[in-house]
Length: 324
Image (cartoon, rainbow, N blue to C red; front, side, top):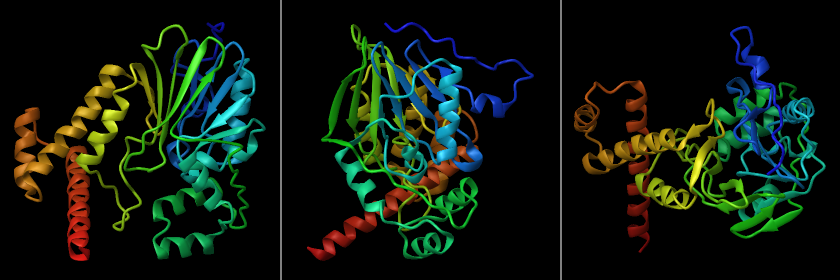
């Protein structure tokens, strides 16, 4: 195993949130993350460190975001990455990739999407035009403006140096990484990274990216979930015997029990919506019995997301039937 790195962990009451967000946090003695920042939609950035090589997971949502991680790596006495990979091709995970000199490894679907975005412009007029034609959403437009307020922003979309199909294994030196395409509603190109000691695949760290989050790029331009798609995704994720789960916009890693609880929460709501459809009162009544409490705003919002997903699926099925 690589020698444990002593990362500063600001946990005292006097340590500010801003300091924590600029400090590399250890998950294990080989896996680390830079915390997410909600105000400009900065995702967590993952680092896996072996005895020979270091892997960076996601490039950052800007060059400034990438520089924060570069400073944090130096403060933690960790080397610059030897490889960079991406969890998916949304802007907040790729805009900072140009800051890194290491080869960029991308699953084929991500690589194709990087190439497609390479020629896009990102000034306000271009963003507004894409929001109008439905290829961009207001939330991402607003977050891009927040992270990069200069209207003359120039963004370099880095393309892949190494492209792989579905799965890639990396040996970092006593630490192995599996880069595996899992898809999902949030982004069809979602690829997870499972890191673990080479001599024991169980109990590793699973970097999820955004794969468990809802679909924002639907024609309603609001979050939707589909229970069928969620179940397919969870079947993929069950193949990884992880002890730690990192979703890119969560506050902190989850242990396996917390991750299972969250996924069961989503699945229960999804199955209930599947059974009772658009009868919101019936759905909420069944959930009240299930949890023994009155549904809060989070539950109601999640019910709405599954009902929207169900409506979108049924609309698609009807369209297919008409075309047949």
